[in-house]
Structure formats: C-alpha cells, structure tokens
Image 1 (cartoon, helix red, strand yellow):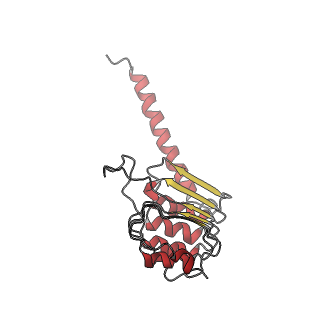
Image 2 (cartoon, helix red, strand yellow):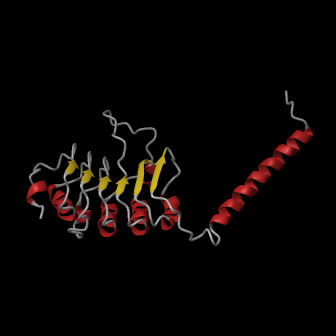
Image 3 (cartoon, helix red, strand yellow):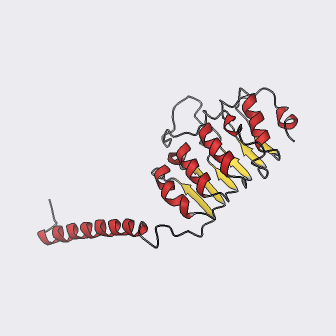
Length: 209
C-alpha cells in the first residue's frame, strides 16, 4: 500500500531536482576560474576502494597537484593504466613514492571480483623513467605486461630510487632488469618474487655504476 500522498511525492521530486542542480553547479564551478587551474596544496594522496577513479579523474586532478609527494593507488585499479601514469608523471614531478601494485592473483586463476581489468605496460614505465627523477619508492607488482624495457632510454634518471617492488611481473626479463638497474643505480631493496623469466640475479650488482 502506497502511503505517500501527492504532496509528499511533489516534495520528493523537488528535492531530487535540487540535488541534481547542486551537483551540476558544483561540477561547473570546478572548471571555472579561479578553480580551473588553481593548485591544491596536497602532498599525499591515497585512493582506496574508488572503482570509478580512473585516468579521466587524474587528467583533471593531476595538473593541480604540483607538490604531490606520495600517490598510493594500490586499491584503485581503474587508474592502473598507462594514461593515468602519464598524467601523474607529467604533472606531479616531485613524486617520491608511487604505489600501483595490484592485488595478488588467485591460485585458481579466477579474477578477483574487485579487479577492473586495467593494467600497466612499458609505456607507463617509460613515462616514469622520463619524468620522475625524485622517485624513492616504486611498486608495480603483478602487472604482467611490464618487461622493464621501458627504462631503456633513461639510464641514471632515478638516482634516488632505493625501493622497487616488481613482484609477479612475469614478463620481466634479464635484459629488462639490466635496464632497471641502469636507470636506478642506487637500488637497495628489490622484490622480484614470481618474476620467472629473471634467472640471473647477479645483474643487480654487476650492472650498477
């Protein structure tokens, strides 16, 4: 039995309309001066359990985060794309910590319900190598398409990078690892568990300079 009278229904529709108008005006205000290009004094950004936070969100947000030092997107797999990393690397060049490791796949091969299907490739690594010279810690674990060759053109570009996690990067090769250590000669903490194509770990020491 419907207990909502005609007046209640009218008020409910009016409230919904007002909420829509407010949301529309708020979005518009963010794209108008002075908010459009206004920098945000944010140094640490953690995105957790936001399935709709993707490259389009970062393309709007990253240009405002010139002072960003830490980005943790481990639980925001929708932004685990080359386009997202390009946005971050291009605009947030003071980044010291970049965490984009994926959740460990299930042993039975089934996809986790929270997985977005997004992934990183060497194009993302290329962007990181080109722009993020201040990086100290990087996690790109369980991105199965990263070979490490994205660092090939950027020897010495990560002089401060100490900690690198590439656990489960099954496409990483010995040649790719050489590119890694040439780009980051100061590495002291490297996690390559599950990188089955890397059979000679001595490259971590022999390729440093």
